[in-house]
Amino acid sequence: MPKIRVVVDPDLCIGAASCVTIAPETFQLNEENKAWVFDHGTEPNGHTYERWLEVTEEEKENIMLGAQSCPTLAIFIFDEEGTQLFPEL
Ligand code: SF4
Image (cartoon, protein in one colour):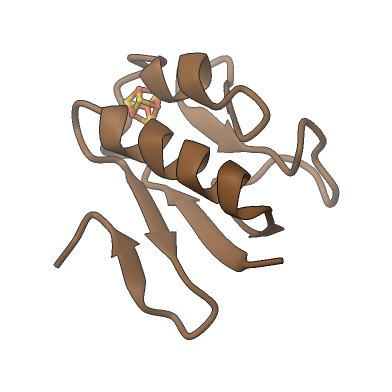
């Protein structure tokens, strides 16, 4: 299964929640209206704005869709080698 790193920049996140609508297993708003990154609906090691996730291709595509939906491009996705998959450079 692909491993990806999902990062939310809390300074860019405005709580629009489109990522949460598309990928609720991965993104959930906190009390400051910033999106925490979850691992399949859970938070091993507690709240965090960035996490390595082991995902299926389908899950990866859905997380990418969530990132693409973010109006401020606050979500960054990297592959195992550290290459930025989104936003495309
Ligand atoms: S879509 Fe972007 S701005 Fe909205 S909650 Fe998610 S990360 Fe934050």
